Image (cartoon, rainbow, N blue to C red; front, side, top):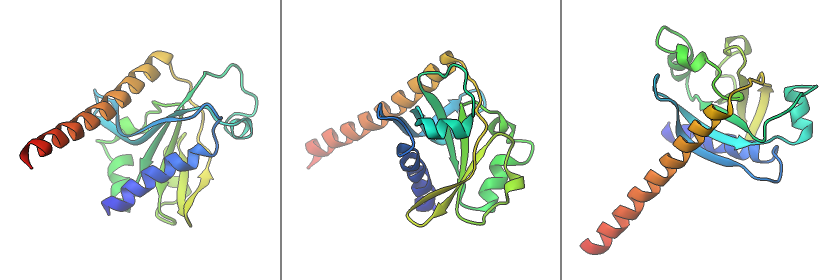
Length: 174
């Protein structure tokens, strides 16, 4: 089951890649969104959508930021979904912290009316994902984006550092 969860997270990043501008995406998996509540998102992407996808999000945009913060939550079972999006301990995930939020699931796992308000929905479809519900655009501060970006970079650096440490130790041991 963990493989499916990771696959949905990676597919969400790949799905978004074809919908963004040529300036490129900055992404990470398992990124801390809110230290106070302990919310760790399955995938986070900083990107700016192509104009045709921007129109789907908000038909008449005012001034847009340079990049948008996308947050993806992968759910592989009803239990996983219910644990995250219903009940008294899950209110932090219902808060819209990024510009756009998506729940990524296998086909027919949930119903559209079960989605939290403002969240989009992607389902597993063939070798990719299919957008079922377009999320609501949520304006956020540049300060918050910088904090998430810093956490994302630090998380990836820490992982790479631990891999390098292991490789160094392995070189000494073998």
